[in-house]
Length: 431
Image (cartoon, rainbow, N blue to C red; front, side, top):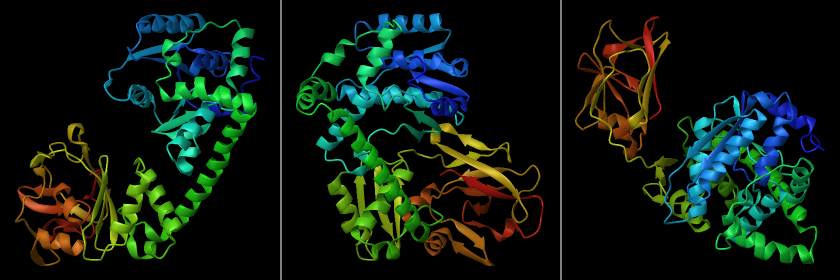
């Protein structure tokens, strides 16, 4: 039975990754998962077990030592991380965010995070989402394989029940820890698991599998809706990631909602409440063309400017007035400001004289820019280019030997532009 829980398809999938990072709490589920993966010679050398010490229980240090010893005995690389988080609010959510933050920091594009969620977990997730009034995205619950952060997230046990994992553990004489907090019914998932699910199972013995199957149906529906939104995006999405309003307004409300849903998710934005979504459509999308409406939630704003919808992830970062690019053309990265600039060789573009002083500044007002044979106020040019007002102060301005040379992403001054030179540059930024 050792290898029956992991199909040949799963072994082949996981074998293609450089590192297999396994979330290892030491409980039944993750113990079975880690033992199962380690039983395959092609996977074992890739395994890294990661234990998150939340520091909540008085037994936390014992659990960490148990996990470390299990990995030592099994020849598996082991990492432990102690995490801090706000325990005055939702402890479940705070612990989950802290846990996933650590996992994310360990992943590269060639790696896979593997978690031990099983079918009972899936059924609980569907019900919790249902109780919150979730839509298709929420009811789709957890997928067995998905892109996550820069890497991949896999849940190879999702089609198996907790009972099957218990049988596996018993047949291999595995030892695991029991987290006493799993019995605390003040937590929503535990209440559902211990108080509600037994009643449902008594009346409908197959209910767990049926609910989990609903998640699969919703995943298919979600995939279909995503595909439709991608089709709609071909006419709606601009190069600057804004949405063209007029053709969007011609769609049905249902398709508008779908386009906005996928647009937000592609930008890694948590979807707003149903009420906020309705405000977004009626107060922003269908506002008069000369209005400047804003709908906000969390750290997100959706704004309208001219004929476009913009997504603004509110950044409370105060950019310095002047940054010297001392090692041009090497990339300039300012981690503390979440800002970077790169220079790419092109056949026509910005000319930077050898040993020139290159500086990056940001608009303060009153700048004059020489472009297309005229000197114009930068403010007027931003208006001509359709740059939203709230973005103008974040656009890098390039100064070469104290002369205003370029507006990154928009224009190069006539004084520093060449049509044909192998020494010209295109500047790219993440801002």
